Amino acid sequence: MKIQDACLPCIVSQAVRCAKQICESKRPAFYRAVFAKLAVMDFDQPAPAAIGDLYRFVKQATGTEDPYAGLRQTVNARLLAEIPALAQRIDQQSRQFLNQIAQLTIRLKNAAES
Image (cartoon, rainbow, N blue to C red):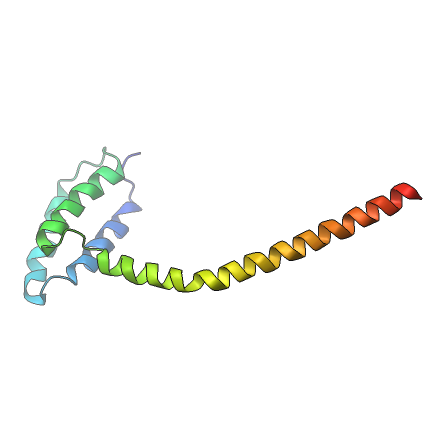
């Protein structure tokens, strides 16, 4: 699928978030380089390919192999903290579902015997 107009705000947003890892004095040059890459981007290529090219540039500019490592760790920690509550909700819903099936089975049995 070709790059759509709707992809552009997301691509720019990603660059802005990554720029926070660069010292403030170097950000204008980083933004100019990002926009220069966007200006010559092949819009006939799939969005993941275009974003991959930009991502490689961001990795080089930020000097880190994974510019999203900190964000990923934060999100993963939040999700892991939610697992016990989610497991409890699933267990509770499962019990309610099984109770409803049991009640339905009894009703069907009673109806068949009548």
